[in-house]
Amino acid sequence: MNSFKDLSNAVIEGNSELAVSIAKNIISQGVDINDAIFKGLNEGMRIVSDLYAEREYFLPEIIISISADALYDALEVFKPHLDLTNTKSKAIVVIGVVHGDVHDIGKNLTKLFLEASGYKVIDCGRNVQPDIFIKTIKENNADVLALSTLMNPTLESITNLIELLKEENLKEKLKIIIGGAATSEQFAQKIGVIHCDDASKAAKILDELILEEKS
Image 1 (cartoon, rainbow, N blue to C red):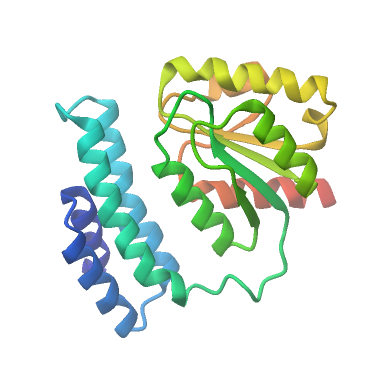
Image 2 (image 1 turned 90 degrees about the vertical axis):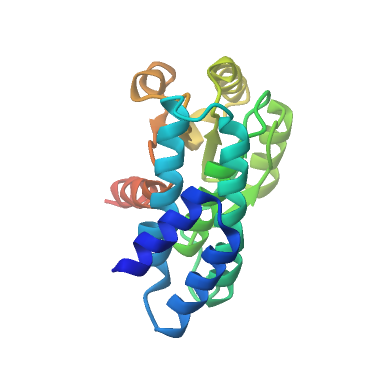
């Protein structure tokens, strides 16, 4: 559908006004909003992220910020039309960007997708200290920990957090999923967690893990 591509391009261009206009048009046409998010907004951010990773932009943080504004503005249009209340929570997810990183675009998008898929998500925010993650996990009896980072130096923050979770006897009780440009399947395997290379895949990965656990 062309409106999905148009929405994607609006995000890539960082055109909030256009993104909002297309989002409103999609709603008026009765198009599946989840499809619009996945095939429009998420695709646009995927392309921006690819360009960032490939250093196609000279000021990637600024470009990402502008694109994120367009994405968030369109999401605000879609959000009231997403059914987030009629589905029993599949699991409780604690999510956040690890200490040392303030880039939260992927985290925010993942949160929305998980909520739309029936997960209860507790958002710790960005640049989160390990003790905050641990406290939140305990207070909410969380089933899943979702961690994000865009920057290679903060991979150490993930490693340190995993070690603390082991010390607190929490690691084996949790499904831990990591994502962001700095992460990889190899790194995830090394520390014994699950890798997610795209925000749109997080819910599917968790669905499969939960189904596997119940079978």
